[in-house]
Amino acid sequence: MKNARQQEIIELIRQHTVSSQGTLQELLKERGYPVTQATISRDIRELELIKKADSSGIYHYVLPDRPVPNADLFAGNILSVDHAGNTVVIRCRSGTAQAVCTVLDNMPHPDVVGTLAGDDTIFALLRTVEQARRFTAELKQKIR
Image (cartoon, rainbow, N blue to C red):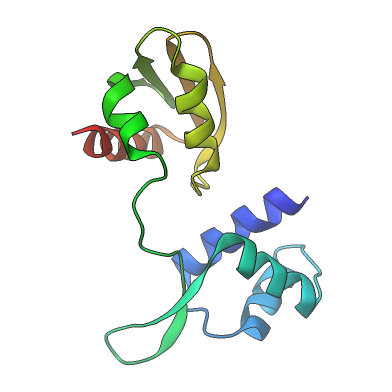
């Protein structure tokens, strides 16, 4: 429930200008997550959300701008990224797929339904073909 709620928070702050915890609480309630202010506060802290001013000067919650954790792990171990339908296939150096997958799993990306890692290959299931295309492009940018 917590992971689903936090993924919903990420989606909400991407879709809406959420400037207060109260607004976030109402949006979550509309989506079936009746939460307390304390829970929202804890989620904001755990997701490391920050408030940033937009072009009109209104402060709202956003994900922090920071490099991907273990970016060297990506650049050094991902050999190729492609997709078929809504499944992204990530080929890695032998023995590194599970470590790379752990980093992927810790990245906030609400479009990823789940991942599966073997020795040198990761499958990431996305909700739609378009999301798989975008995710593939994002990963290719991170490994260049």
